[in-house]
Image 1 (spheres, rainbow, N blue to C red):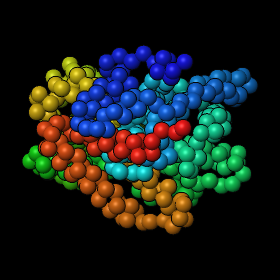
Image 2 (cartoon, helix red, strand yellow):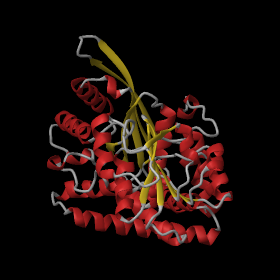
Image 3 (cartoon, rainbow, N blue to C red):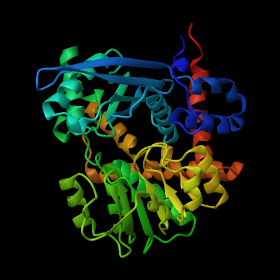
Image 4 (cartoon, one colour):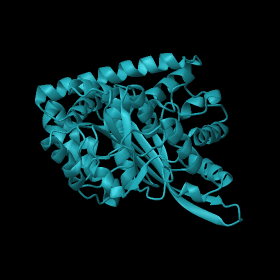
Length: 423
């Protein structure tokens, strides 16, 4: 039975959104369009049972996934998320977006993604470690430094990557630092990795703002999701003279027209687990977030947040997609009609995987760069990639999202065509 027979996407579901994006770009692929169907079929999907013994002695079972969408340009690359809503369809879509993202910034990777359907907040640290190690052992048959390299994603971090690296190394009999990225620094991690995704959002946002004549000095920024990505991007925008006027996460929505003091807000979020309860702001209804006046909106939470109805209400001039798949296709059309520029996730949040690539290269050479070197290399790659995409958008009179897919799909399908079919 085909993998696709297990998935029943709707128009605005993650996989349905991705398929719509591929359909939109196919007319711009020329002779390579004959290979476009391969973009709609993940190369490999592994569904695993993850049984662990809980602290109370009972045995719990969790369902885990690792999907490799495309390996035409190199080993798979993509994060692992722990979330109660993780599904095979979601992981398929995320792996496909990783294929596009890696090709868009011209990294020598294919696309992959993983996840476990679990609420990690309900697990103790030891339970979390046991689950991570068992999951790593289960997917160990398809991951490796030259096969598929996991990384942190939603609810996973450097500690989780350390457990994964150690488990894989123990099972293979040799230390393999390159099997994951996003590791602790003293285990082969890279300087600059933690804030790399947020930095990429800022760098692409800075370039986009310049192109549309939006000064960052005094610009009003609203951020949805205030984890590593949202908070890091917010800090850089504030350093550039902008002010954060609204923040939203799973705990609530806050507004401060004068601008948040991030030196106080970020420690509050770190200590309490969310923005709720922050004294120097006004709490508003979550749905009101989409009506707030701002110049720049950064959705940095989960996919499917900007629907067509919400897109009609947005007051931003620029949307910077820090999350994966936050805008559904019907909303893309609304935003384009309203003249709101969207810098799509597959280029906007590619800073994380770019520095993951730097980490992977450094692990192989056992030679590590300074954080300044990392940031300079990241900025250069992100700016160059966006300029190539913008030129394609101007040439074909298409959105930046379709242009990003055009550039990325051309690279993926050229590799697919040149490698041919075997046997």
